[in-house]
Length: 278
Ligand code: AMP
Ligand code: FE
Ligand code: FE
Ligand code: ZN
Image (cartoon, rainbow, N blue to C red; front, side):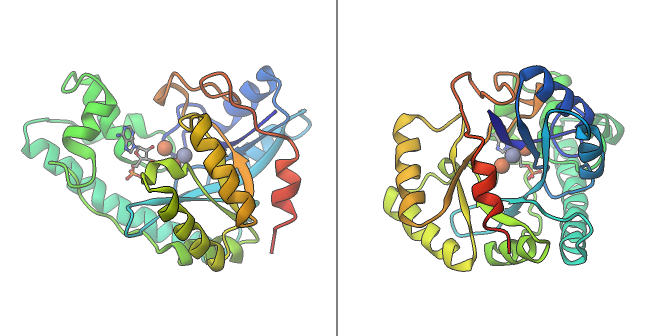
């Protein structure tokens, strides 16, 4: 069993790269991929921690791309952290995030939800700060009952404290991942809330841009959706992949490797993805 979608303290997960490897060992997983949002800075520690262990560590990243359907999350596997084009693009994205975070912070304070910057930073961990950290701080202060409410009332796109940030286009994302020796996969397609016909047309466009895989197996995909996405992946020659989007305490119902309990991602997925490397 493997898990190809995992976050650490370098983005919005609550376990360090070392703790993730240890948890993967304890869970009996054969491989996990680190796919932090907009950063590859956790990868050296992640790879070092896996060395000499029974767990294969796959370097990855998750980048949000802009599209008419909302934010598309594109996973990049086997990216080389030394790649200049990718590193520069991620740097630019994080800078835009910083500006956006300051705006969200001011918006919240203006709305009477007063937070200290250092409180939010405490939730952010090692590297990338994002809306989930604001949500955690808001829950911590008792301003909202849970993170979902924080997003629905304040942090979601178009909501009262929302602020925009720069997101590259899907084509740019896929090109960047390719230029870093990586393979692109569309994450959790259900979040786009598209009809099967729309999903098919989006995927065939992304396929022509160089997308190589589709995250078919995902905790929130029920049997029906999983079947729909698997059929689309087969039809469009995309590798069907899967992962739990593990965030540690950030999403306590999700277990590494098995999601809500029933998720199973085949070990052979790694070889199928690796065969698609540029
Ligand atoms: P950011 O990248 O900082 O704009 O934050 C986006 C992240 O927030 C996504 O990757 C999700 O992990 C999380 N997120 C988005 N919407 C929600 C929601 N309604 N409830 C909880 N988390 C969410
Ligand atoms: Fe996340
Ligand atoms: Fe995502
Ligand atoms: Zn994710």
